[in-house]
Image (cartoon, rainbow, N blue to C red; front, side, top):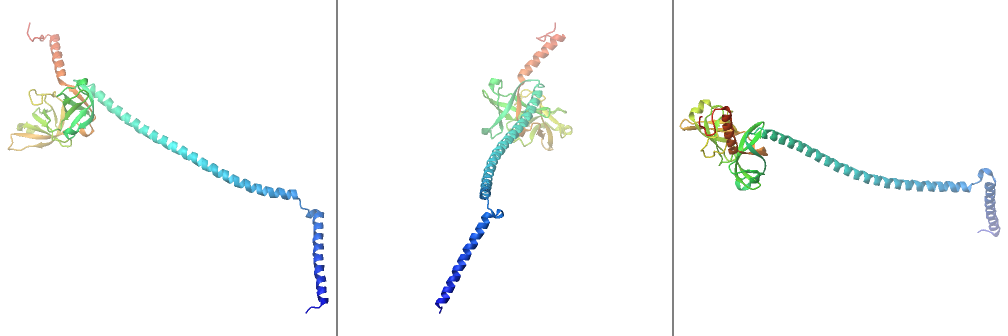
Amino acid sequence: MRTDGERKQKSRMNTGTVIFAVLTFVSFSILFFSTRSFVVNFPDMGLSLFSGVRGGIHGASSFVSRTVLAVRELAVLRREYAELAGRMTRYEQLERSAAEIRQENNRLREQLGFSETIGYRHIPAEIIGRDPDNLFSALVINKGKRDGVAYNMPVIAFRDGVQALAGKVVQAGQFESLVMPLYDVSAFVPARFSSSRYNGLVEGQGKSEYPLLMRLISKRARGEIHFGDMIVTSGIKGTLDAVFPAGINIGRVSRILYQEYETSMEVELESIVDFSRLEYVFVIDANFDANSSANLNDETEDSDGTGDKDGSDD
């Protein structure tokens, strides 16, 4: 056990330690505030502290501002991109439309040039449909009685600089008409070979992709028929379909059908008209042309002094 003397001695030591610590703290404080090198500049310290805080706040606000600005610019860029993409699509559509218009103009110019060479009174028409009641074999054109179209008028087309027979009018409405194409099974056309002049009858086989058939050809023509020979309308009167003027191209010989036991021969024809791409046709008035030609011939004979109108001699 500790004695009273020891406790007193320890108490004095503790008191001395505390006093020493207090004196040391006071001394360092006096030295800190009185010596120039240890003086703390509170305004500078506050400025530094505030500058750091302000820099942090400025950096954070700048980051937020840049982020918001970037998002806004991104939205603007997306909107501008959408507008440019839409404008590019419209330009492409306009370019395609312009190309289609140029092609259409070229086709119409070609048809116009052909129209000027036709020797008959004619009515240009556009194919606008196919008749479902005829299993799509009949063609619907956009011209009718109002335009001068009448029943049984021949219909021709133009392809690669050549005119060819396409069919005939079987029904004329006021504003539209129905055309029976050449490949229809009910189509019969008196025809002849352009070179050898042998006659026959051309008929369709029901579909545009099937060849036309020319029947009732004299067997004497066997040695004078060749592949590629042109077949034209004969213009023979008094036959079943005597509405076609002479000399209109029909097709070329693609196959010769000959049997020794038959009294006549047949040939298959490749039609000049490509019905799968047919867009424009011309309805012709052959009777009008025939009358005009007759009048013209009479006037020519009168002017030449070879005859008069009633055919009598002076």
